[in-house]
Image (cartoon, rainbow, N blue to C red):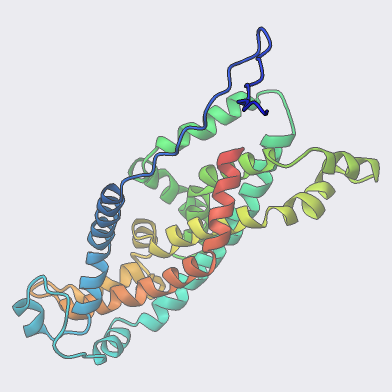
Length: 301
């Protein structure tokens, strides 16, 4: 005769932690996710609306521009506005000037900021803290307070009324921000690479040019993109340094050709704005991946 037995749970040892049950994960309600996506979509459209309105207005005629108000959709696409804006405002000359200034500013800024950032990150020297403080303090100086001494300095150096003076001034304006980005990036790189270079007989400068600088490709793209956007869209400095030489104006300054004393050619002004924005938007799309990687490396440092 068999006797039915029930399984007895194993006895827990004294002092052993009690078994815990896995808590079910709480899923985010779908309603909250839907509201979040709707809010982000509405915010994105609100940010994009000025650009969409400018794009649509650049394809309208004058009557439709004033008649349809804030409606960005044109009833007829007038692509001739772009050709008229390009020819009437001498955008060909201004485009070349802007391109030269942007390239020169990027090269000068990257050269100075990469070297300064590497020195501040890897070369301890007396007064380093004071140097960082003085560099940081210049971030809070607006252009309005420094433009007069800068203008006087360029005049005494004989560089006034030249594209080269604009390149120097704009490159100097972006040195502080780029230096801190490079300093944070170089601090994230392991020092074993530099130690190995020293063992092989490389000097401090050779280590920078042959090892550290090639590794900073994402940061070069990030600082270069920031500098290019700033130099391309700059208005105040090119305006001041080209007052006596209108043929050296940039695109942002040249758009004022559509603003007269008695009237403003709004459709051509919108077309000129789109012509100015397209190159820098294309540059951002091409360098977006490096831009994100470079910022992540700088923040991590």
